[in-house]
Image 1 (tube, helix red, strand yellow):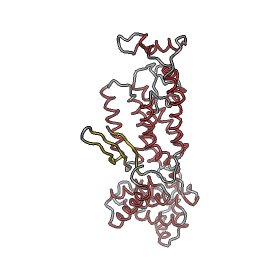
Image 2 (cartoon, helix red, strand yellow):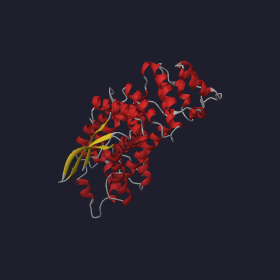
Image 3 (tube, one colour):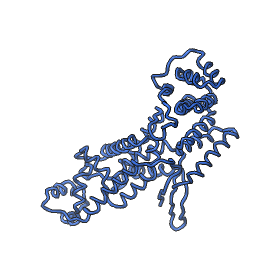
Image 4 (cartoon, one colour):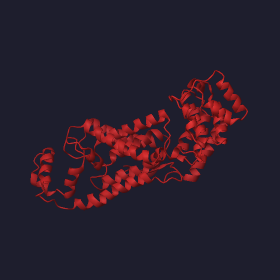
Length: 404
Protein backbone atom coordinates (compact mmCIF):
# COMPACT_ATOMS: atom_id res chain seq x y z
CA UNK A 1 0.00 0.00 0.00
CA UNK A 2 1.22 3.48 -0.87
CA UNK A 3 -0.51 6.38 0.92
CA UNK A 4 0.61 9.97 0.15
CA UNK A 5 0.68 12.19 3.23
CA UNK A 6 2.06 15.52 2.02
CA UNK A 7 4.33 17.28 -0.47
CA UNK A 8 7.24 19.68 -0.31
CA UNK A 9 7.95 22.50 -0.81
CA UNK A 10 4.75 24.50 -0.53
CA UNK A 11 3.95 28.22 -0.84
CA UNK A 12 4.79 30.27 2.23
CA UNK A 13 2.49 32.93 3.64
CA UNK A 14 -0.28 31.78 1.33
CA UNK A 15 -3.70 30.43 2.27
CA UNK A 16 -5.28 28.29 -0.48
CA UNK A 17 -8.80 29.52 0.15
CA UNK A 18 -10.29 28.10 -3.05
CA UNK A 19 -8.76 24.67 -2.43
CA UNK A 20 -10.13 24.68 1.11
CA UNK A 21 -13.49 25.87 -0.22
CA UNK A 22 -13.64 22.96 -2.68
CA UNK A 23 -12.79 20.47 0.06
CA UNK A 24 -15.39 22.04 2.36
CA UNK A 25 -18.04 21.91 -0.38
CA UNK A 26 -17.44 18.21 -1.03
CA UNK A 27 -17.50 17.39 2.69
CA UNK A 28 -20.65 19.48 3.22
CA UNK A 29 -22.50 17.67 0.43
CA UNK A 30 -21.49 14.35 1.97
CA UNK A 31 -22.65 15.36 5.45
CA UNK A 32 -25.89 16.99 4.33
CA UNK A 33 -26.95 14.58 1.60
CA UNK A 34 -24.86 11.45 1.16
CA UNK A 35 -24.62 10.28 4.76
CA UNK A 36 -28.19 10.92 5.98
CA UNK A 37 -29.87 9.82 2.75
CA UNK A 38 -27.85 6.58 2.62
CA UNK A 39 -29.78 5.36 5.64
CA UNK A 40 -33.20 6.45 4.44
CA UNK A 41 -35.53 3.91 2.82
CA UNK A 42 -37.14 4.81 -0.48
CA UNK A 43 -40.76 5.57 -1.11
CA UNK A 44 -41.74 2.84 -3.55
CA UNK A 45 -44.58 4.97 -4.87
CA UNK A 46 -42.01 7.42 -6.23
CA UNK A 47 -42.03 7.16 -10.08
CA UNK A 48 -38.24 7.52 -9.96
CA UNK A 49 -37.97 4.00 -8.49
CA UNK A 50 -39.43 2.43 -11.62
CA UNK A 51 -37.23 4.61 -13.83
CA UNK A 52 -34.22 3.54 -11.75
CA UNK A 53 -35.05 -0.15 -12.15
CA UNK A 54 -35.53 0.16 -15.89
CA UNK A 55 -32.18 1.93 -16.27
CA UNK A 56 -30.05 -0.04 -13.80
CA UNK A 57 -31.45 -3.58 -13.83
CA UNK A 58 -30.19 -4.58 -17.32
CA UNK A 59 -26.62 -4.04 -16.08
CA UNK A 60 -26.93 -6.01 -12.86
CA UNK A 61 -25.42 -9.51 -12.46
CA UNK A 62 -27.37 -12.39 -13.97
CA UNK A 63 -29.81 -14.04 -11.57
CA UNK A 64 -30.31 -10.94 -9.42
CA UNK A 65 -34.02 -10.33 -8.89
CA UNK A 66 -35.67 -6.87 -8.84
CA UNK A 67 -36.76 -7.33 -5.24
CA UNK A 68 -33.13 -7.94 -4.23
CA UNK A 69 -32.15 -4.67 -5.91
CA UNK A 70 -35.00 -2.86 -4.18
CA UNK A 71 -34.13 -4.33 -0.77
CA UNK A 72 -30.76 -2.56 -0.85
CA UNK A 73 -32.03 0.65 -2.41
CA UNK A 74 -31.66 3.86 -0.40
CA UNK A 75 -32.87 7.42 -0.92
CA UNK A 76 -29.30 8.40 -1.76
CA UNK A 77 -29.19 5.85 -4.61
CA UNK A 78 -32.15 7.61 -6.19
CA UNK A 79 -30.59 11.03 -5.50
CA UNK A 80 -27.38 9.95 -7.24
CA UNK A 81 -29.36 8.47 -10.12
CA UNK A 82 -31.19 11.77 -10.51
CA UNK A 83 -28.17 14.07 -10.23
CA UNK A 84 -25.16 11.98 -11.28
CA UNK A 85 -23.85 12.25 -14.83
CA UNK A 86 -25.34 9.62 -17.16
CA UNK A 87 -23.55 9.26 -20.48
CA UNK A 88 -26.72 7.90 -22.14
CA UNK A 89 -28.71 10.98 -21.00
CA UNK A 90 -26.14 13.78 -20.61
CA UNK A 91 -27.15 16.98 -18.84
CA UNK A 92 -24.73 19.84 -18.16
CA UNK A 93 -26.14 20.52 -14.71
CA UNK A 94 -25.64 16.83 -13.81
CA UNK A 95 -22.04 17.13 -14.97
CA UNK A 96 -21.45 19.84 -12.34
CA UNK A 97 -23.49 18.11 -9.61
CA UNK A 98 -21.60 14.86 -10.11
CA UNK A 99 -18.27 16.49 -9.15
CA UNK A 100 -19.53 16.98 -5.58
CA UNK A 101 -21.25 13.62 -5.04
CA UNK A 102 -19.40 10.55 -3.75
CA UNK A 103 -20.14 6.87 -3.39
CA UNK A 104 -19.09 6.63 0.25
CA UNK A 105 -16.76 7.92 2.96
CA UNK A 106 -13.60 6.23 1.64
CA UNK A 107 -14.32 7.55 -1.85
CA UNK A 108 -14.61 11.08 -0.43
CA UNK A 109 -11.61 10.76 1.91
CA UNK A 110 -9.26 9.55 -0.81
CA UNK A 111 -10.25 12.32 -3.19
CA UNK A 112 -9.97 15.06 -0.57
CA UNK A 113 -6.56 13.82 0.58
CA UNK A 114 -5.17 14.18 -2.94
CA UNK A 115 -6.81 17.59 -3.39
CA UNK A 116 -5.42 18.82 -0.05
CA UNK A 117 -1.88 17.66 -0.87
CA UNK A 118 -1.57 18.87 -4.46
CA UNK A 119 -4.10 21.67 -4.86
CA UNK A 120 -2.40 24.47 -2.89
CA UNK A 121 0.66 24.73 -5.15
CA UNK A 122 -1.53 24.81 -8.25
CA UNK A 123 -3.80 27.49 -6.75
CA UNK A 124 -0.76 29.57 -5.82
CA UNK A 125 0.61 29.24 -9.34
CA UNK A 126 -2.57 30.33 -11.15
CA UNK A 127 -4.45 32.47 -8.65
CA UNK A 128 -7.80 31.79 -7.05
CA UNK A 129 -10.27 32.43 -9.86
CA UNK A 130 -8.15 30.75 -12.55
CA UNK A 131 -7.62 27.73 -10.28
CA UNK A 132 -11.36 27.37 -9.71
CA UNK A 133 -12.00 27.59 -13.46
CA UNK A 134 -9.27 25.03 -14.16
CA UNK A 135 -10.63 22.67 -11.51
CA UNK A 136 -14.12 22.77 -13.00
CA UNK A 137 -12.83 22.77 -16.58
CA UNK A 138 -10.62 19.71 -16.19
CA UNK A 139 -13.46 18.01 -14.30
CA UNK A 140 -15.73 18.60 -17.28
CA UNK A 141 -12.99 17.34 -19.64
CA UNK A 142 -12.60 14.21 -17.50
CA UNK A 143 -16.31 13.43 -17.68
CA UNK A 144 -16.43 14.03 -21.43
CA UNK A 145 -13.43 11.70 -21.85
CA UNK A 146 -15.18 9.03 -19.79
CA UNK A 147 -18.31 9.32 -21.93
CA UNK A 148 -16.24 9.11 -25.11
CA UNK A 149 -14.24 6.07 -23.97
CA UNK A 150 -17.18 4.05 -22.63
CA UNK A 151 -20.48 2.75 -23.92
CA UNK A 152 -23.53 4.98 -23.34
CA UNK A 153 -24.97 4.07 -19.98
CA UNK A 154 -27.60 5.18 -17.48
CA UNK A 155 -25.34 4.23 -14.57
CA UNK A 156 -24.48 7.59 -12.96
CA UNK A 157 -20.90 8.79 -12.70
CA UNK A 158 -20.07 10.65 -9.47
CA UNK A 159 -16.98 11.90 -7.69
CA UNK A 160 -14.42 14.70 -7.71
CA UNK A 161 -11.59 12.46 -8.93
CA UNK A 162 -11.81 13.61 -12.57
CA UNK A 163 -11.30 17.25 -11.57
CA UNK A 164 -8.62 16.26 -9.05
CA UNK A 165 -6.84 14.27 -11.76
CA UNK A 166 -6.75 17.52 -13.74
CA UNK A 167 -5.03 19.19 -10.77
CA UNK A 168 -2.55 16.29 -10.66
CA UNK A 169 -1.77 16.74 -14.36
CA UNK A 170 -1.08 20.44 -13.80
CA UNK A 171 1.10 19.63 -10.79
CA UNK A 172 3.03 16.92 -12.67
CA UNK A 173 4.27 19.34 -15.32
CA UNK A 174 4.60 22.55 -13.29
CA UNK A 175 6.26 21.15 -10.14
CA UNK A 176 8.55 18.36 -11.41
CA UNK A 177 11.11 18.78 -8.60
CA UNK A 178 8.69 18.53 -5.71
CA UNK A 179 8.67 15.49 -3.47
CA UNK A 180 5.83 13.61 -1.84
CA UNK A 181 5.87 12.05 1.61
CA UNK A 182 4.43 8.55 1.22
CA UNK A 183 3.54 5.96 3.84
CA UNK A 184 4.64 2.62 2.38
CA UNK A 185 3.32 -0.72 3.63
CA UNK A 186 4.84 -3.87 2.16
CA UNK A 187 3.39 -6.37 4.59
CA UNK A 188 5.02 -7.91 6.54
CA UNK A 189 8.49 -6.62 5.65
CA UNK A 190 8.37 -2.84 5.41
CA UNK A 191 6.41 -0.09 7.17
CA UNK A 192 7.83 3.39 6.81
CA UNK A 193 7.35 6.92 5.52
CA UNK A 194 9.61 7.95 2.64
CA UNK A 195 10.09 10.97 0.40
CA UNK A 196 9.61 10.18 -3.29
CA UNK A 197 9.84 12.40 -6.39
CA UNK A 198 6.35 13.64 -7.21
CA UNK A 199 6.61 12.30 -10.75
CA UNK A 200 7.16 8.78 -9.41
CA UNK A 201 4.05 9.03 -7.25
CA UNK A 202 1.85 10.62 -9.92
CA UNK A 203 3.27 8.35 -12.60
CA UNK A 204 2.30 5.33 -10.50
CA UNK A 205 -1.20 6.78 -10.09
CA UNK A 206 -1.62 7.23 -13.84
CA UNK A 207 0.09 4.11 -15.15
CA UNK A 208 -0.54 1.44 -12.53
CA UNK A 209 -3.76 2.64 -10.90
CA UNK A 210 -5.51 3.76 -14.08
CA UNK A 211 -3.94 3.15 -17.50
CA UNK A 212 -3.07 -0.52 -16.94
CA UNK A 213 -6.55 -1.47 -15.59
CA UNK A 214 -8.16 0.54 -18.39
CA UNK A 215 -6.15 -1.27 -21.08
CA UNK A 216 -6.83 -4.75 -19.72
CA UNK A 217 -10.53 -3.96 -19.26
CA UNK A 218 -10.56 -4.61 -15.52
CA UNK A 219 -14.04 -4.92 -14.00
CA UNK A 220 -14.34 -2.13 -11.47
CA UNK A 221 -16.54 0.73 -10.33
CA UNK A 222 -13.58 3.08 -10.83
CA UNK A 223 -13.95 5.46 -13.79
CA UNK A 224 -10.47 4.98 -15.24
CA UNK A 225 -11.36 6.94 -18.37
CA UNK A 226 -12.34 9.98 -16.31
CA UNK A 227 -9.08 9.88 -14.36
CA UNK A 228 -7.00 9.59 -17.53
CA UNK A 229 -9.00 12.29 -19.30
CA UNK A 230 -8.68 14.72 -16.39
CA UNK A 231 -4.94 14.11 -16.07
CA UNK A 232 -4.42 14.60 -19.81
CA UNK A 233 -6.42 17.85 -19.69
CA UNK A 234 -4.25 19.11 -16.84
CA UNK A 235 -1.07 18.18 -18.71
CA UNK A 236 -2.29 20.00 -21.82
CA UNK A 237 -3.14 23.18 -19.91
CA UNK A 238 0.21 23.12 -18.09
CA UNK A 239 2.09 22.62 -21.39
CA UNK A 240 0.28 25.59 -22.97
CA UNK A 241 0.98 27.68 -19.88
CA UNK A 242 4.69 26.92 -19.98
CA UNK A 243 4.92 27.56 -23.72
CA UNK A 244 3.04 30.85 -23.55
CA UNK A 245 4.59 32.25 -20.40
CA UNK A 246 1.19 32.71 -18.73
CA UNK A 247 1.83 34.47 -15.43
CA UNK A 248 -1.46 34.91 -13.60
CA UNK A 249 -1.71 33.98 -9.98
CA UNK A 250 -0.27 34.86 -6.60
CA UNK A 251 2.98 33.30 -7.72
CA UNK A 252 3.34 35.91 -10.45
CA UNK A 253 2.69 39.02 -8.38
CA UNK A 254 5.81 41.12 -8.12
CA UNK A 255 6.90 43.23 -5.21
CA UNK A 256 7.04 46.98 -5.31
CA UNK A 257 3.83 47.33 -7.30
CA UNK A 258 5.61 48.07 -10.59
CA UNK A 259 3.81 47.54 -13.87
CA UNK A 260 5.00 44.45 -15.72
CA UNK A 261 3.24 44.98 -19.01
CA UNK A 262 6.11 46.92 -20.56
CA UNK A 263 8.31 43.85 -20.86
CA UNK A 264 5.70 41.34 -21.99
CA UNK A 265 6.58 42.08 -25.60
CA UNK A 266 9.68 39.97 -25.15
CA UNK A 267 7.68 36.83 -24.53
CA UNK A 268 8.27 34.51 -27.51
CA UNK A 269 5.49 34.57 -30.05
CA UNK A 270 4.12 37.95 -28.95
CA UNK A 271 3.08 40.39 -31.65
CA UNK A 272 4.67 43.17 -29.59
CA UNK A 273 8.15 42.12 -30.63
CA UNK A 274 9.32 45.20 -32.51
CA UNK A 275 11.88 45.55 -35.27
CA UNK A 276 15.16 46.89 -33.92
CA UNK A 277 18.28 48.23 -35.48
CA UNK A 278 21.39 46.12 -35.82
CA UNK A 279 23.05 48.07 -33.02
CA UNK A 280 20.24 47.51 -30.49
CA UNK A 281 21.99 44.65 -28.71
CA UNK A 282 25.30 46.53 -28.64
CA UNK A 283 23.50 49.57 -27.23
CA UNK A 284 21.86 47.36 -24.61
CA UNK A 285 25.21 45.91 -23.62
CA UNK A 286 26.62 49.42 -23.32
CA UNK A 287 23.71 50.54 -21.12
CA UNK A 288 24.20 47.52 -18.86
CA UNK A 289 27.95 48.19 -18.59
CA UNK A 290 27.14 51.77 -17.55
CA UNK A 291 24.53 50.45 -15.09
CA UNK A 292 21.95 52.63 -16.82
CA UNK A 293 18.86 50.52 -16.09
CA UNK A 294 16.28 52.97 -17.55
CA UNK A 295 18.14 53.11 -20.88
CA UNK A 296 18.59 49.34 -20.89
CA UNK A 297 14.90 48.79 -20.17
CA UNK A 298 13.90 51.16 -22.99
CA UNK A 299 16.15 49.29 -25.45
CA UNK A 300 14.96 45.92 -24.17
CA UNK A 301 11.34 46.69 -25.01
CA UNK A 302 12.21 47.11 -28.69
CA UNK A 303 14.24 43.94 -29.18
CA UNK A 304 13.14 41.27 -31.62
CA UNK A 305 13.40 37.56 -30.90
CA UNK A 306 16.49 37.41 -33.13
CA UNK A 307 18.06 40.11 -30.97
CA UNK A 308 17.24 38.15 -27.83
CA UNK A 309 19.04 35.14 -29.28
CA UNK A 310 22.16 37.30 -29.62
CA UNK A 311 22.10 38.05 -25.89
CA UNK A 312 24.17 35.46 -24.06
CA UNK A 313 22.62 33.81 -20.98
CA UNK A 314 25.14 35.48 -18.68
CA UNK A 315 24.24 38.86 -20.23
CA UNK A 316 20.55 38.15 -19.55
CA UNK A 317 21.41 37.46 -15.91
CA UNK A 318 23.40 40.69 -15.62
CA UNK A 319 20.63 42.73 -17.21
CA UNK A 320 17.95 41.04 -15.08
CA UNK A 321 19.97 41.84 -11.97
CA UNK A 322 20.17 45.51 -13.00
CA UNK A 323 16.43 45.63 -13.65
CA UNK A 324 15.69 43.91 -10.34
CA UNK A 325 17.83 46.39 -8.39
CA UNK A 326 16.11 49.31 -10.13
CA UNK A 327 12.69 48.05 -9.04
CA UNK A 328 11.64 46.40 -12.33
CA UNK A 329 11.21 42.98 -10.74
CA UNK A 330 8.53 41.76 -13.14
CA UNK A 331 10.61 42.77 -16.16
CA UNK A 332 13.67 41.05 -14.70
CA UNK A 333 11.79 37.79 -14.20
CA UNK A 334 10.22 37.87 -17.66
CA UNK A 335 13.64 38.50 -19.20
CA UNK A 336 15.06 35.41 -17.53
CA UNK A 337 12.11 33.29 -18.63
CA UNK A 338 12.51 34.54 -22.20
CA UNK A 339 16.22 33.74 -22.03
CA UNK A 340 15.39 30.15 -21.07
CA UNK A 341 13.06 29.92 -24.05
CA UNK A 342 15.37 31.30 -26.72
CA UNK A 343 18.41 29.42 -25.37
CA UNK A 344 16.56 26.17 -24.59
CA UNK A 345 19.25 24.08 -26.31
CA UNK A 346 22.12 25.78 -24.51
CA UNK A 347 24.07 23.94 -21.85
CA UNK A 348 24.95 27.20 -20.12
CA UNK A 349 21.76 28.00 -18.23
CA UNK A 350 22.83 27.31 -14.64
CA UNK A 351 23.18 31.03 -13.77
CA UNK A 352 19.80 31.80 -15.34
CA UNK A 353 18.05 29.17 -13.23
CA UNK A 354 19.93 30.36 -10.15
CA UNK A 355 18.85 33.97 -10.74
CA UNK A 356 15.22 32.90 -11.27
CA UNK A 357 15.31 30.78 -8.12
CA UNK A 358 16.79 33.59 -6.04
CA UNK A 359 14.20 36.06 -7.31
CA UNK A 360 11.34 33.68 -6.59
CA UNK A 361 12.69 32.97 -3.13
CA UNK A 362 13.03 36.68 -2.37
CA UNK A 363 9.34 37.07 -3.23
CA UNK A 364 8.32 34.18 -0.97
CA UNK A 365 7.45 31.88 -3.88
CA UNK A 366 9.08 28.82 -2.35
CA UNK A 367 7.65 26.11 -4.60
CA UNK A 368 8.62 27.91 -7.83
CA UNK A 369 12.05 28.79 -6.42
CA UNK A 370 12.66 25.14 -5.57
CA UNK A 371 12.02 24.04 -9.18
CA UNK A 372 14.48 26.59 -10.58
CA UNK A 373 17.18 25.96 -7.98
CA UNK A 374 17.10 22.20 -8.54
CA UNK A 375 17.41 22.81 -12.30
CA UNK A 376 20.75 24.55 -11.71
CA UNK A 377 22.43 21.17 -11.25
CA UNK A 378 21.29 19.94 -14.67
CA UNK A 379 23.70 22.36 -16.37
CA UNK A 380 27.11 21.56 -14.87
CA UNK A 381 27.27 24.71 -12.72
CA UNK A 382 30.50 26.30 -11.56
CA UNK A 383 31.48 25.75 -7.94
CA UNK A 384 30.29 29.25 -7.01
CA UNK A 385 26.91 28.88 -8.72
CA UNK A 386 26.37 25.40 -7.25
CA UNK A 387 27.19 26.67 -3.76
CA UNK A 388 24.73 29.55 -4.07
CA UNK A 389 22.03 27.16 -5.24
CA UNK A 390 22.71 24.81 -2.31
CA UNK A 391 22.56 27.71 0.14
CA UNK A 392 19.20 28.79 -1.26
CA UNK A 393 17.86 25.22 -1.10
CA UNK A 394 19.11 24.91 2.47
CA UNK A 395 17.24 28.11 3.30
CA UNK A 396 14.05 26.59 1.86
CA UNK A 397 14.56 23.51 4.03
CA UNK A 398 15.17 25.65 7.09
CA UNK A 399 12.18 27.96 6.74
CA UNK A 400 9.70 25.42 5.40
CA UNK A 401 10.91 21.95 6.36
CA UNK A 402 10.57 18.78 4.33
CA UNK A 403 6.92 17.90 3.91
CA UNK A 404 3.86 19.15 5.75
